[in-house]
Amino acid sequence: MSGKLLVPYVTGGIRPDWTGYVEAYARSGADMIEIGLPFSDPILDGPTIQQASYRALRQGATVRSILDDLTEVDVDVPLIAMTYYNLVMHDPAFCADLAAAGVSGLIVPDVPIDEVDELAASATAAGVDLVLLAAPTTPGPRLAAIARRSRRFVYAVSVMGTTGERDRLADDAVRLARDLRALTDLPVLLGFGISRPAHAVEAAEAADGVVVASALMRMVLDGADPAQVGAVVAEFRAALDGVGVPVPG
Image 1 (cartoon, rainbow, N blue to C red):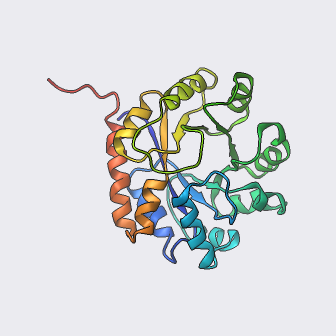
Image 2: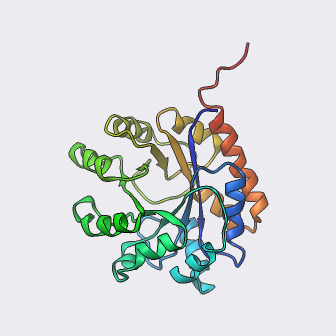
């Protein structure tokens, strides 16, 4: 075992049986599971995640309904919510509600490090780890601040742009992961564009793990059921478990 972390993503409420994906991911070797709380005006979501969010919203998904669904889920891996500050800032009980639903981490990508104090305090009070993001263009002093203030792990964005499937891992991704690992003892996970098990292996040479989102959500949008998507998660798991394992012979 390599110890590399695997965090697959699912958009909450995309189908009536969407929590089946959460359970399938857990059975397939996920270390944590990212739950997208759909928002109508995302800034970092690419076409696939946007389409998934719009489908969930059209079906009536809300933060409340998604959290209610999660209270019925029994998995042995942490759940991390991802959403935008517009949904968070108007609800003083947002972080407490996450915790009550069994969610122990939160990613809010549109809150800059300079304005994170209030949200960080609310998350800490609720026992929720606020995960911060760093990008390839983040200057050194801000990178250090993000590494210092993030909790549970640091989310390294592999490219400048939105989420989405890509043909290859960006060169800047490896540099960013190495820079962050020099600044923190927390795991550094690479996301955005991790589309194939080979990308995860390449990323894990520099990072402590990966977040896989659009590649899985494309399958969901195309009609794949939890078992089918879970099988792909298992392929990512197997690939990461092989990182650093000497080849016999």
